[in-house]
Length: 178
Image (cartoon, rainbow, N blue to C red; front, side):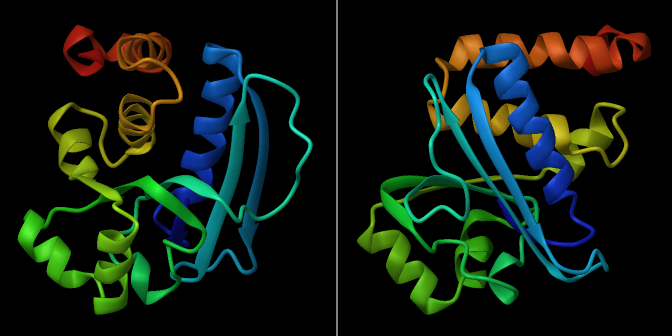
C-alpha cells in the first residue's frame, strides 16, 4: 500500500491485515513504513498474507497487489516497484479512466503495459459519502482488495467483509451496510 499521510493508508493497511487474519484465518506479516506522520509525507504499508507460516519480515520485493488510497501516488513514490507480471493495482480516484491513465507518468504507463498489470479505480470517497460512511474509505478499499486480489474467492471475501461491516456499521441501518 502506497500513499501519503492523510489518505488513511496505514489505517487501511492495518484493518486489511486484521481482516485477513480474523475473517479469513490467514497468517499476516505487516509492516507500516512512515517517518513523519505529517500530512503529505510518503507512507507505505507492506503486508504478506499466507495460509502457512510466514518467514520474511520487511519491505516486499515481489508484489502481487498494490492498493493506494492516494490518486497522486506517483508524486511521492514508485508504487509499481517490485510488481510481478500480471499484478493488480487498486487506486482511489474520482477521475475518468482516461484522465487517470493520463495522470500516470510515462514510465508508469510503460511498466503497466510491460508487466501486463491490471488497474482498477474506485471513487471510494463518493461511495463512502453515498452510503452514509462519511469519509471512511477503509471498508470500501478493503472490499475492493479482497474482491479483486484473489486472496480469497470473491464471494467469500465479500461475505466476510459484509460481516465486518455489519459489526461496525450495523447500528446505522441495513442501507449503510448494503
